[in-house]
Amino acid sequence: MQSFAASSFGLATPEIIVAVGALVLLMVGAFSGKRATNIVGTGAFVVLLLALIAVAFLPSSKNAILGGAFIADGFAKYMKALVLIGSAAALALSSDYMQREGFIRFEFPVLILLSTVGMMMMVSANDLISLYLGLELQSLAAYVVAAIHRDDTRSTEAGLKYFVLGALSSGMLLYGASLIYGFTGTVSFPAIAEVVRGEAPIGLILGIVFVAAGVSFKISAVPFHMWTPDVYEGAPTPVTAFFASAPKVAAMAMAVRVFIGAFPDIIHSWQQIIIFVAILSMALGSFAAIGQRNIKRLMAYSSIGNVGYALIGLAAGTPEGIQGVIVYMAIYLAMTLGAFAVIIGMRRGDRYLETIDELAGAATTHPWRAFALAMMLFSLAGIPPLAGFFSKFYVFAAAVQAGLYTLAVIGVVTSVIGAYYYIRVVKVMYFDEPKPAFERMAPGAEAVLIACSVVVTLFWVVPAPLVNSAAAAARSLF
Image (cartoon, rainbow, N blue to C red; front, side, top):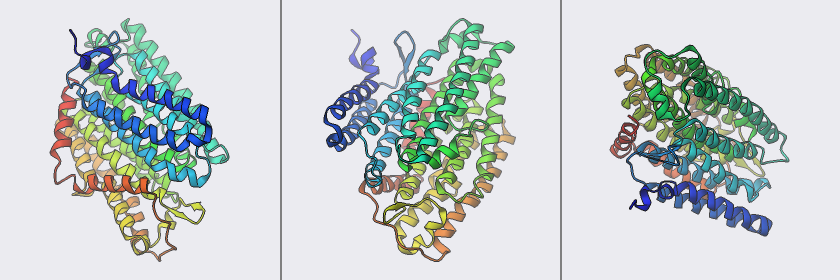
């Protein structure tokens, strides 16, 4: 008799916990109104922790359930853990901010939970239909979350832009999926891999291009990045922190599932697309951020550049390359959440501030915060011995092993160029004339910052747990 852990319900336990938790908390909020806002927020955080514990107990062996549409393996286990951590951190960053801004609503944590269910489905999708269902569940909740501050025109505009462009990208992905189905006769990734061997027909390649376009939108890769700076700047800061963390991890996992799971034998057909997108993303992320004055907009271009670096590992198409992607996304999650924890703490009086100039002299007024943000920015720039250096090292090494020397060189050059705008923020904090001090950080933001700082600064001391588990997760795909 099949054990519960290997049964259909057992393998989907984390998703079931989050989905049922979201529905229960929705009913609590609907019947209790504003009185239950804090209860719903705390409950959502507990639900995510329970799901994370459930993920830890999942088997690492490969198991396909629900007719092969849902797959559980080491890769899914690892990436789901990152998604849940990112969502929980976003909730921790949001409560104090929304209360102070006067738009705290019980719907927000419920929407985060529903979006998380979609992200977990994206990670475990093993056919085109389940992938699309997970993607749309994540996206629909994200559209609403972007516009959650209804009284702020910037937030409303961000939600509208995200929705319109997201609908376009979904249409492109669906069209590509229909072409792939038409030329292969199946939607299952393993079945597609069995059919597609040798030289792929032009129609199938066209389908792959459209799917790649849809995936590129979700990970904010050039040339489908146009929504990112405006949405990051316009959405409330905790929402921006959420968009920059968990959905990025899930979308990158989805990209790995699609290309490695469905098209492993025609890597030459899709590798060029990934290389092209990676180079454009790294270049734009390095140059476009130089002139930014809004720190949330700067982080938007930073995320575009970081996606380009992560795509280098996918372009390699090897276990080492996927290991590099996994390590990169884990460290990127810590760096980004740590940076946004400091950004959310930029408050004077009744105003949250977003311009880089407001950080002037922060090393004098807030030495701990300035040091932590400097470490996050130096890590994003790839300066050793911080964690960001190792994340870039793993993807560049994988590219070199795969013979993609030009791509690796371009990655190193754009990384050096991008270091300028990170160091400029550090210069403002340490060498400019101090401005008035910010208010005390909220406990949630402080906890996130401490946890992320430990990961970023001390990763080099004990890298083995993260790196070895990432290697095992990558091997489960091949």
